[in-house]
Length: 175
Ligand SMILES: C[S@@+](CC[C@H](N)C(=O)[O-])C[C@H]1O[C@@H](n2cnc3c(N)ncnc32)[C@H](O)[C@@H]1O
Image (cartoon, rainbow, N blue to C red; front, side, top):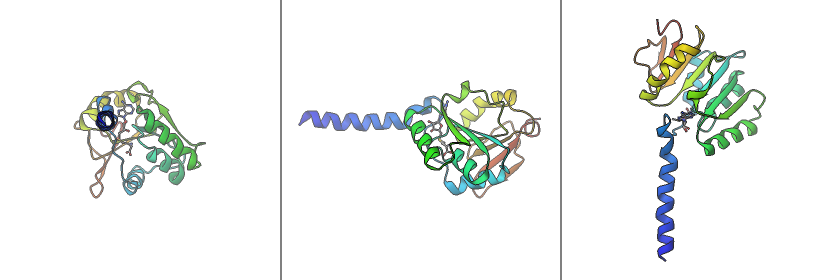
């Protein structure tokens, strides 16, 4: 009897640890609604020829939609092994593995310089921690799209207040 009670409480603790531990790296998981992802990619004028990087891929929805519906190539970085596998499966079963991929890696250690579009749904402090890296590595003209959280020191070029999306352009927003 006591063993089952212990297993029950241990499972609850493990579940919350799993939900929350990626907060330590930048943000816990919470998905961007699909319609908001589409509005985000429309606001950023994502199109064939673009190379989109999603920092914190979650379940892979942004890279999948960018490749399938907008014709872009896309890479997601994800630090949670279970969400990395879910992302990978989503990419494969959506038939976009030729255009989209996910890497099991901390995005702070990734080279972001090939990106023409970067998407983020993280936390305010994580955006601020990433700001200098984005300024250093991204080419002028690269579009940075954020959901909900902003960049305090940058000026957005476009905002969709309906869905809380902000478009920043390197070289314009940060000058
Ligand atoms: C709020 S979710 C957003 C998921 C997805 N981009 C979306 O909009 O649906 C943030 C994701 O970032 C991941 N993450 C947090 N810090 C990270 C880091 N340093 N490197 C890679 N992934 C990270 C978390 O595991 C989580 O899945």
